[in-house]
Image (cartoon, rainbow over all chains, first blue to last red; front, side, top):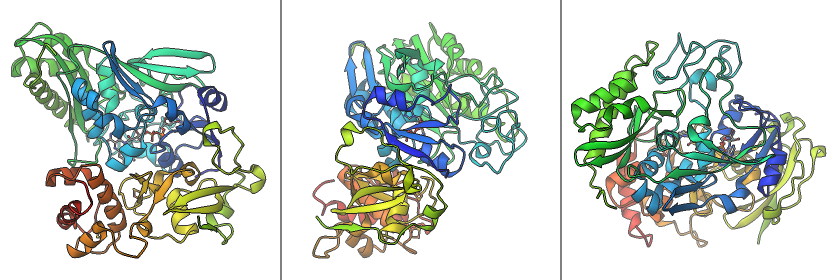
Length: 341
Length: 200
Ligand SMILES: Cc1cc2nc3c(=O)[nH]c(=O)nc-3n(C[C@H](O)[C@H](O)[C@H](O)COP(=O)(O)OP(=O)(O)OC[C@H]3O[C@@H](n4cnc5c(N)ncnc54)[C@H](O)[C@@H]3O)c2cc1C
Ligand code: FES
Ligand code: FES
């Protein structure tokens, strides 16, 4: 690990001032906020992230760790821990997909440490990104190439990739936030602003080292997830190489608003298979107005994976992703939810 | 409260540490912490950790993980380093009664929090914690390397109410890997201890 200066931010304005160099969304900005540290400290040890200044924002948790359910929706504080939100009764009842995406992630120890803000900003688990002894990684060293495209790419992305980077976005919560029209609340040197969650992460676009649309000094303060008939009839299905304490190979976040057997509205997010938190409006459009059965579910999943690009080791992923989504849709349909509630 | 300080001087890592300093950020909410000095400390910073009910004053490289602080500076070697990457659970400690990973915690960021290691689990009279006794009674280990982390994790698992069924225990203990595969006996040990711990 490289030497760094450690500071604690007592409040938001101090965080933005101390964090003024957190960069323009590049993955390895010279100033890093420290929340739970489960991504940051790990990658600093591996010499992948090399901040010269670490700004501990955990004191902000005194004000920014709340969970509030109102008629307008769900508000989640960015410093709330994964375990707190996963176990929260309101979240489990009204937004089960969010609770499940968190309780199926990482381990109890990690969930006790990790914050929601840090969770959505976690870095890819691509082994070539995580190991600097590999020369070529466009995410780590812009312009150096991508080792994974020709290399070991068992758990790399098939959606949203380009010829410069096929890294997988490994997080679970972000998949649900993308599907459920969530907004990110930000606070920075020039004030507060809101950003659609789907605009937080940049597409690959030939510049994989630029990961987010955060501005220098911006702290994520919370997330707003709007209310909707689909949030109660929702679930997160995660398929992985082992049954617990593992990242997704393929996952699906599904929320359904049903009129009897017919889909009024659908929300669909895909994890484990994409470059960034992935929503599939194509699959949603196929379902709207149709009775939900295995045939329509399959048609929706075909639409979701129409643009998939594979690289050998991950050739199995589009099919696994399709089957995961079919199962998630049919399970969501049969959830015992009263539509009136 | 008993106080001890690290008298061993800079560690090997500390000497290798370059000029990391601790700039004095204002710390309104963490005023309870000792004042910390700047870059003149050669990368070393003063910190106070509360471990097993005792305050420990340390002067170590700012990069020191809580796990290394425990093992290399405080002779509390019960916490084990398996992977050092958050992937195995051998370094599990209780922080403010919650199970967390000491390998991914910066020691300096753990100031002001209550840390319990395996050394602090037994009673003051030396009587083993019911979970320690249950691991012995059920032969819930082979090499023993994962055991301190398993025991602390198991104590928290029961306290959280996550030890009601075998499947529940398996899921909520999945953050602790065991190379020797003692898993079935670990589940038995937890089932023995849960009734003796007041909750679960
Ligand atoms: C072994 C292992 C298994 C895991 N398995 C899973 C899994 O299955 N599913 C899953 O989703 N995740 C998994 N994770 C990832 C884990 O969930 C993340 O590391 C964690 O959520 C990050 O949160 P943190 O608070 O620790 O972030 P930190 O490590 O503190 O920060 C991460 C990044 O976010 C920035 N940051 C943090 N908070 C803010 C904020 N409020 N505003 C602006 N920037 C901020 C930091 O500067 C840093 O760049 C796993 C991790 C490990 C080590
Ligand atoms: S040593 Fe901390 S999780 Fe393995
Ligand atoms: S007893 Fe050997 S690793 Fe668990």
